[in-house]
Structure formats: C-alpha cells, structure tokens
Image (cartoon, rainbow, N blue to C red; front, side):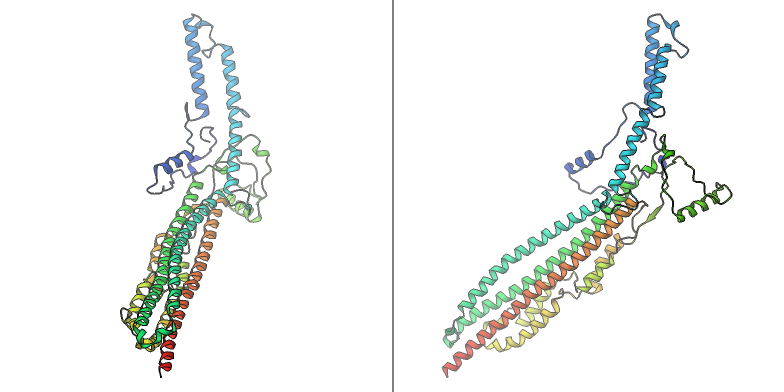
Length: 466
C-alpha cells in the first residue's frame, strides 16, 4: 500500500505495537515464524512513482550520452531527449501513473485482497456472518484447544498408571479372600490368620493412600493447567488484537476512480444525528439542519479505541469453593489420620483380639472419607490465594485496541473459550469427586466386610469348640 501510495494517512495505523514472541523458542519454530511473515522489500525505490522517475532519468541520461558520443547532441529536443522518446516516456507515465493505469489496477487488486482479508478476519460483513469464526478468534480457539488437549493427555496418563496399580491391588484382594479358609479360625491357626489380616489391612491402607494421592496429583495438575490456560488465552487474545491493529484495513486505503459512484450504505437515524451534531460543531453543515451526505475522499481510519473487559478470573474461586478444592495435600492428611487411627503402623491389625476395636474405628474412617470426599483440603478462600495472584497478573485490566467487528469477534472467541473451559473444569471436578469417592467408599466397605469375615470366622470356631 505504501509502494502504491494508497495510504492517505498511514500515521493512524499503530505500527509501533509489537507482539511478544514466546520465550525459549526453538530455532526451527523461530525460522518457521519468520518465513510465515512476508517481507516486501522494494528493490529500486520506496514508491512506484519514484521507481518510474529513476528509470526515466536513467533512460534520459543514457540517451543523451549516446547522442553526445555520436556527435548528434544538436538533434535533441527541448527536454534533452529526442521528441519521439519524450512522447514515449510521457505515454508510459500516463499508462502507469495516470487514471486507470497500472498503478490504479494494482491498487484495485490490493483493495480486493484487503476485502478478502477482512472477510477472513470477520471484520466484514456487518453484522458478522455467524458461520465465520474469524482468523483472530481462530487463533484464540486453536491455542485454547491445544492447551486443553495437552492437559487431558497428562491426566489420562496419570489415571492409566493408577488403574494398572489398582488392578494389582484388586487381584491381591481376591487372592486374600480365597486364602481366608474356615479352618483359619482355629486357635492353632491364629498366627496365620493374624498375618493374612495384617497383609490385607496394609493393602487397604495403601489403596486408600494411593487414591488420595492420585486425586491430589490430578488436582495440582489442574491448578497448573488453569495457570497455563489463563496465561495462554490472555496472551493469544492480546496478540490477535495487536496484529489486527497493525494490519492495513479498507478504512486505511485511499481513493480510486469510480468510488463516488458506489451506492453508500444507508445510515441509521442514530448515526445521522451523530453526524449532524459533528458537522454542526465543526461548522460544516449547510445551516438548515440537513446533513451533508456528499462523497468525501477517504483520509485514513477513524476507528475508536477501547479497553476490553478482562477475564473474569474470580469465577475460578467460586468453582473451587463449590467443589471444596484447595491446593493442600490431602494424601498426607489422610496418611497422618490413618496413622492415628491405626496405631501408627497397623499394629491393631496384627492381633485378632483387636477385631472388635476395628469395628469402632471403621466409623472414624468413614467420617474421614466423607470429610475428604469433597477435595480433602477445606477449599476455603485462604487456600486459593493463587487465584488472587492470577487475577492481579491477568484479570485487573483488559487488552486495549481499536473497535471493529473483527476485534469484537476475538473477544467473543476469548469469552466463549473461557466459558467452555470453566464448564469442562466443573465437569472434571464432578467426575473426580464421583470416581474417587466411589473407589474409597468401595474400599472402606470391603474393609468392613473383611473384618466381618474374620470376626465371624473366629466366633464360629469358638462356638464349635464349645
């Protein structure tokens, strides 16, 4: 556009805005980014007219030198070149720079390209086509989806690893259940029964501890994912807005012959009143209250600017409180409680006389399960200070840019992705609550069943002995 001198007021384009490049970018990715950004470098002059002037001057000087070397300088015309050459140069200038010439055709092709670009950006039409996402919004969408896919892949691997260990523990439970034979209730088999009971209690304790730990690891991973997602969506939104602020739009391009014949879009009553007030203030109205609607040549963009609302990061706090989740260490809490209830190292499980005591302690474990099933950490506002820090960093002030339909699409895309992210996080927390609470309750129910088997086994053998 600058080369074709098609920017009536290029100073209005915010060229000074820069997009931050990702830190520690690999050389391969950096090279790919640079190749993706076309760099137009004029080889002869900064504008087409300057290039034509240089070529004309070179043609004139070489022609004069040729005529002087041949001793025919007196045949040159008033312009210092033969009249025929001067006529040809004039004709070329008109064909290139004149109305409808090569420069105007190039300008028209450039305008068509910018029109297509605006459609890709969803700047046009107004109102926007609901079937077109827009390139800026697509940037935000793509980075958001990529971030979520990466995270869920990590979660899937964690749960897959836990599942393989849980299957081993389940097999061990079934083996212990088969080993619990009726004859083990006799007094002479008490040592064997105590040993089996101790092993199974240790297995149960290990499973409960592992359930708490893997759930805690997943929650901590989700917290890190939230931080990364907020950073990613904020930076991508800001980058998309900056890129569109620095792009050449139709409003920046100049006049082409025939533009005054194009039917103008009808203005709404609100816009007509605003235009009338503006003309009255500038003294450009005709004095009878009628708004002048004659064609005026473009003089650059006239886009207003605004600061967009920031991300509502406090919604995270409400979500974490809803599910009673905080970045504490529930698996360690459970381990300490288990040690207190089991005598430190499951010493009660090594003695059959402690079976009745275990029945009382089962109720305590059940209470612990209910208190920890919501997240094992209280989930109070004090524990979620990281959300406040995140809000200070990304949620205090929103991005600033000019206002076009394309910019609005970017903000809509950001808000849409944020709502989907919050919804997915809510569903994931609900799934975790249900899944791991069920695993714990099943394990606790089995513990009661196991102790009941041992108790009945001992009681039956005592009755037979009598």
